[in-house]
Image (cartoon, rainbow, N blue to C red):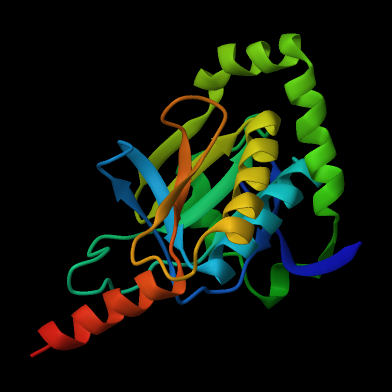
Length: 221
């Protein structure tokens, strides 16, 4: 079982404390509004989606944590002119998104805790998904409760609040995409969730990233 160490902070909101897991800046990851799926998504390369898989595993292992991806950056000429940071949490965490700016300011050395150690076992997580798929009751209950989930922009950050079942499904979908996607494709492929039109983002093979960067160079003044 792989062990992943993540930066961890304890921050204070108006009424309670939170623990935030801060992921590293990722050069090829963008959170933005996607007109195809009509929701906010994260596009990224292999590295970005590997970290997104870790994020899903962390939410399953510690649903009281907040996941922070500091990925807002200057967009390329034709791609992602408006993009944002990303925050993921579970629907069971009473998290006031309006407090995020205040919480983010506390992500400094004074509030840092010992690193969060994620024991990452992808096969065990796939077993959890199999149990969900084998249980019609749990599966359809998850479908009925999907409106609890959140996908919203506030300020410069996109927020996702996900059910446990969605974390399981997205994790498996991310691994399948990374394992089976043709690296020679020049376009991204959607990583879909539990129900119709649910999408966490578009996986970008190396050629898709390379082409986008080359277009930016050609159009640069």
